[in-house]
Figure (cartoon, rainbow, N blue to C red):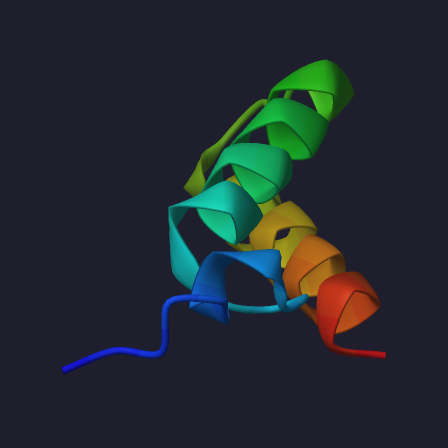
Length: 48
């Protein structure tokens, strides 16, 4: 069971993945290493 307000919290749920995906796509990674790097940078930005 999940908290009904979970989607409103930063760093949780589908909303965070949507934000990460959009921001990574804007950076246009040229290879898998860049994709992973950008993804981790965006994830860390959300958590901090």
